[in-house]
Picture 1 (cartoon, rainbow, N blue to C red):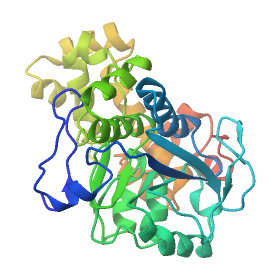
Picture 2 (cartoon, rainbow, N blue to C red):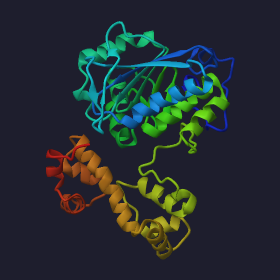
Picture 3 (cartoon, helix red, strand yellow):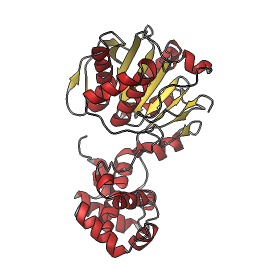
Length: 348
């Protein structure tokens, strides 16, 4: 495996090989020492991501009745920043040349490059060696990559950006995983994977029982491998109620640019298209064809709002046989032509 760690299932695996120098010296090795965490928070970040970083540490401290973690929030200018929900976060300090600790988390969401300058990225690159680990959540992977910290590394980012991220940073080996740890660098796909990562960190440092207690505090009973692919659609309990529908959706997700016929999807599930229609109507109150179109339009909206791809290219990437067909479907679904939607997107 080299430096690429595949973190295991929360309830299945606890300890790493003790003969590995990296494991013994990393933040993931068993210890009673306090871990000092610095969180660089950018505007338009998700409050859920920030909470998923901090609250598991708080809970671990409370449950263990000792200071397992300390943390501080910094911003690039030392001033408060607004999360996407509108809540303003007041930082404990400013990102500067004296910033140091054990772990540096970079948290960003929408429009990451609007809130961080070339000098800021140079500063991150300069201070990174002072930390035992540096990580990025959601769009922060773009910041780490642009700072050169992901060159030659395995990495991930939010599922919506995986394709463009891989095209932009060809020196990185991009994975669709929930989170990826490669030596001293980690990247995480979103809020729920951040919680998974923090439980992995707690389990690795402080043991299996405490990680279970922390998960229980938040009634977090979903369990994931780090290598579980990030889904285009989070299906929640649907898989328990009707796994055939979730399998159909996963097939659709894998064929966004070249849509399959519903008959072909049904054949892969060894059932008739009529049966598949009934299952979708029963569980999702729509036909599989309508749901499939919705998936493609969701992907198209991401391209419209977050890339500079031409509308023709977006139409091709989302499986429409003509620009006019794409425009008609997009306008019908979002009540706005794609070009107008790009000019005036709804607020996050």
